Length: 124
Image (cartoon, rainbow, N blue to C red; front, top):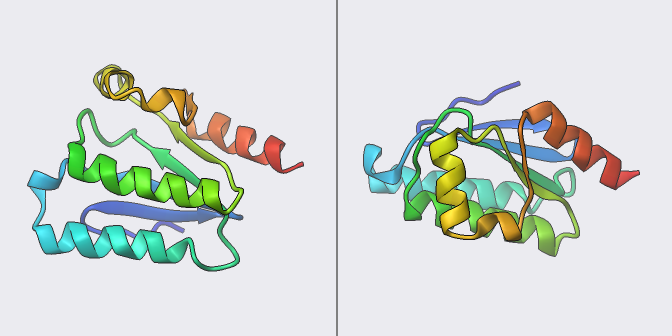
């Protein structure tokens, strides 16, 4: 079930934390961005979550503050020997991901279902 937040929408699918950024940091109060980013990071400390899926379907642009928070989360999944992926990026978001070369570190899937399937297949 989805847990609406201001900055990120969060969902758990089995051992995967699904995070949906809702816009660039400049659209939100800094304390909210900071609090929610830290909350995401702490969620990955629990034994139930190992993987991270960043669903970019709600944005055409995110700034370096949000990207930094997401990269921190993706790195934590990798450190836990979990999977970390992106999905559902619009053309403008794909260009941003390419320009910062993030696609070389974490795969991008066309849909959430494809991303979840890829995570699931790597678990087998």
